[in-house]
Length: 107
Image (cartoon, rainbow, N blue to C red; front, top):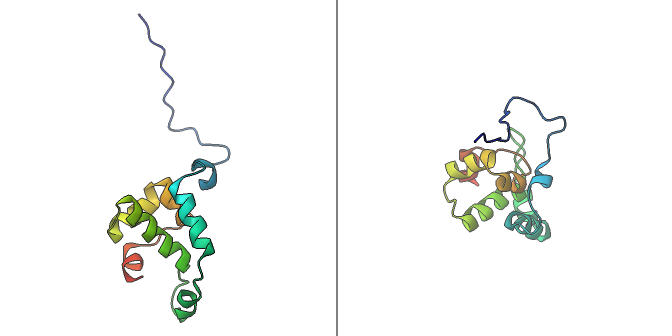
């Protein structure tokens, strides 16, 4: 008996890559974390930045990936850094940015 499988094609590029918004389902914990963060007053964090060196990540992003990481059992800065590249939920919380582990640990 011959079985017809769905073809495997990893080389055809997508015409329009999907956004992180489209890939994360409604009601996901990451959406809840972002919604709560948007309501928080982060003025103390924002005003604490001195403006030297590279352009910093927004405190909302760093706080969000820490909160989401802790809520999902991802605790170390290196694991959170990897998750910001690999996990669609972390990419959503991080606004598709990729802070390195030193930045996460320092924050």
